[in-house]
Image 1 (cartoon, protein in one colour):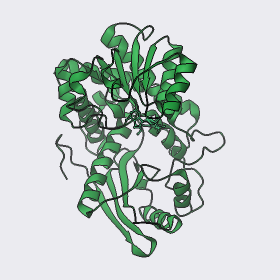
Image 2 (cartoon, protein in one colour):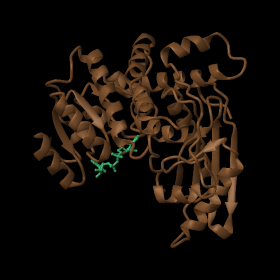
Image 3 (tube, helix red, strand yellow):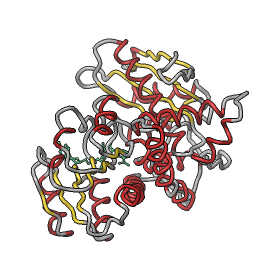
Length: 373
Ligand code: NAI
């Protein structure tokens, strides 16, 4: 399969089908060039197999790019499973899925994603060791990734604000959409730095807590994208940057944790035309995957901290390249990720060295967590 950037490394699409267990779906392996293809397992309603497979391929490529730009020794993959109608036997389904993952002999590493949970992944681990996103092991990183995600977004925002506004976050106004696990953590870091906060969430209790704890202002969920703030931090849903919201934005910098913030690729160009700096979501929200994969790679919290610490510099390289080339930041990030992967392929040319300067991959030895299956 060839993608728009010319990179051609969709490796494998494995159809998994076990009617007795209620299992039906695919595992898409986009690339194993940098390491095992890592990406979560989505359980969702799909009508046709073509839709499901298309989603899996698109999401697997997204994971390749995210892992490459996070400097992880991992490729990209994704499992997408059709949610059986009505009540179903989760144990049977995730045991069968674990067996499908095991048959790939480590080419694909799974984790939780939309529609799956830690409990499901514990069932998967009864059948294969190639699963992450479980509890931290003693002395190792792991567990809840949200605080790492918030830290990476915060440090990226600090760096981008310095570049865009020539000043620190102190005294700047940041509008945060969604104050769940990541958004609330980000607000606390911003407050400690002296930033002013405007927050919105569909959960009024979460908003009330931050108003009381941090003196944040609040506004309605339909207003947050358009409030007077220098920075907008989407930390709730995907698709929030679209043809309806982009004309309303007052912020000049967008930097947040939500996945797939751009409704379409073209919206990156629309932001650029409005003179708004967009920090590509998968670059700045990589703290979560860094922490989850550390559990699989057997890394410590110090190693996770070191990797998260590289996010801001990576973002600045992307912003600089976007300015120099006049291209939208999302396209620059995609092209850089594709280049990192292509340069690591056997027989890659001299470009590899140049790429590594931009995004130095940290390559610890692969040490696998003990597994039951
Ligand atoms: P969460 O579920 O803890 O928080 C999301 C918050 O958004 C909730 O408080 C929810 O009430 C609120 N919300 C939902 N719809 C909203 C709307 N229309 N307007 C305003 N608020 C709304 O999720 P979490 O873990 O904080 O993740 C936030 C985003 O970051 C998600 O898009 C997630 O995919 C992404 N992300 C999270 C990572 C992590 O480590 N947790 C890692 C990478 C990305």
